[in-house]
Amino acid sequence: MSVIPAGGFGRWAVSQAAPMRRMHIRGDLVLDDGGWSSGGFLADSKVDGQVTSGSQQQWLTRNSELGGWTGANWNMVFVGTQNAPAQSFPDPPITTVPSAPRIREKPFLSVDARGAWIVVVPAVHSDVSGTTWSLRDAPGVALPISDFVIVKPGSTVGAMNDALARNKHLIITPGIYHLDAPLHVRRANTIVLGLGLATLVTDRGTSAITVDDVDGVIIAGLLIEAGPTNSPTLIQVGPPGSSVNHSSNPTVLSDVFVRVGGASVGRATQSLVINSNDVIGDNLWLWRADHGSGVGWTANTAANGLTVNGNDVTIYGLFVEHYQQSQVRWNGNGGRTYFFQNEMPYDVPDQSEWMSGTTRGFASYQVAASVTSHEAWGLGSYCFFNRNPSVVADLAFEAPVAPSVRFHDMVTVSLGGGKGSILHVINNVGPAAIAGATVQKLVGNPR
Image (cartoon, rainbow, N blue to C red; front, side, top):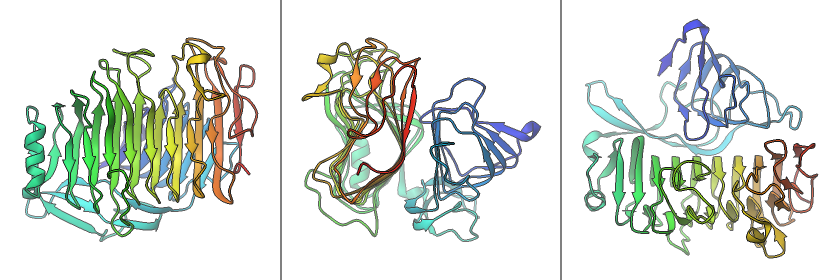
C-alpha cells in the first residue's frame, strides 16, 4: 500500500501489537503524538523521507528502506534496514544489524491479473536487507483462495479442525472465537492467517493452538486470549521432545499476540512454548495484563511468557510483559533474538512472594545453564513495582558464561521515578536501575 501523507508526513503513534508491514510512505513518518508510545514494529516497508521516533521508548525496524532516521530513547534496533542509523549504543541507544539471517515475510491477500483472490506466501530469505517488493520478481508462491476455508464468527473449533484435516488452510476473519479444544495443525506447510486481530479464547483450560513437529507451518495475525480456567500452555509449536531439522522449511509465527487478563479473568501457566527446531518468530507480544478487567496477582495468574526448547530458534521483535516468574526461558541451543522489550510484573505484593530460590525476583530473559550457544541484540527490561516499591529484582538477564553466549546492547529502567529496583543488568554485572539513576546500560556479553 502506498500513501502520500497530507502535509508531507504520516503519524503512526503506536505501542505493541500494531505492526506496519508492506507500506510505502511517500514522505516522512512520525512515530509519536507528543505523549509516550511504548514500542512498535516496522517491516518490509519503505519510507521515502525521514522517520522521527520522538517519544517512542523502543522500536524495531526490520528489512525496510528509510530516507533517514532521527531520535532514540531507550532501545532502537534496526535489522536488515537500508539507510538505518549507524551502530551507536549506548549513546544514542541504537543497535544496527546489517542483515536478517533468516526470515519469511507474513502472507497477505492479493488479487491476481484475472481479478481472482489469492494468498501470496513469500519465500524464506537468508542474509537479506531491504524490502521484498523492491525486487521485480520477489520469490514466493500464490495460492488460490479455494485452498482456504474462510472462518467466520460462529464457526467452531471442530469445523476448523475438520477443514485442516481436509488439507485446507484457514483465513480467520475478524471476531471472537471461543474454543473448547485446541486448533490442531498436523500437516506441513499449513497456513492459519487471521485478519483484524481475530481472537481465539480458551474456555476450558486447553491450549488454543497446537502444531505438530512438521515443516513450514505459518501462524499469523492472531490474538490468543486465556479463559478463566487455567491453560497449562496457550500455544505449543511441536510436542515435547521434537527433534526434526526444519532448517530448509521453518515454521513461522508472524504477528502472534497473547493476552492473559485485561478483557476478563484469564489464567495460563505458559503462553507460548516452542519445542520444534528452526522456528522463526516475527513480532510476538505476550502480555499478562497490568490493567483492564480481571487483573490481580491472584486473578490473572501466568508464570512464563515464552519457553524455547527447540534449537536454532530466531525471533525478531519479542515483547513479553508482566509474567509472574521468568518472562522468557530459553533452553535450546543456537537461539537468536533481535530486540526484546519487557516490563516485570507491576503488582508484586511482597518480596517474599517473588523469589527464585534465594534470588530476589526472576530474570526477565533467562538462558539455561546447559545452553552453549545463544546470541541476542538490543534488549530492555523495566521495573515498576507500583504495589510495593520496596521490591527488588537482583538481575534482569541471566545466562551462562560461555564463549558462544553473547548479549549485545542491554538496558534496564526503573519507571515512574524509581518504583522498585533492578540491581544488576546481567548476572552480577552492570549497575542498578533505581530512583535517581533510572536508566542504566551495558554493552557486550556477560563474560
